[in-house]
Length: 104
Image (tube, rainbow, N blue to C red):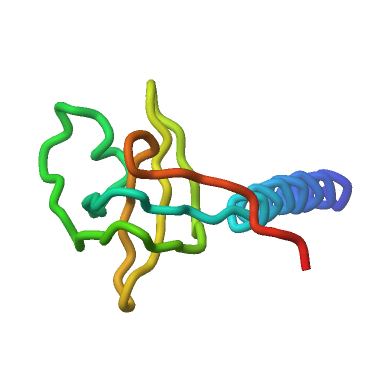
């Protein structure tokens, strides 16, 4: 019994470690906005037929943002950013460029 609980705990710790590493990898990127784009409430708004999507804020051209999370859908990459205390998702493509943060 103790062995099985230990194995379950070890598996959970490995999964949490992989998840934390994924988040840290995402946050090692920046987004440069070269054209005005809209940030949406959900990363799944990248699917053209997703109902209930709304614009959280508009992102002006010429701004840089730290990446909070990156999610991948079929044929798109969604990037979570913050602006003025609000969180929203922009989509890679025209006007949105991602790059690694310079190491300090």
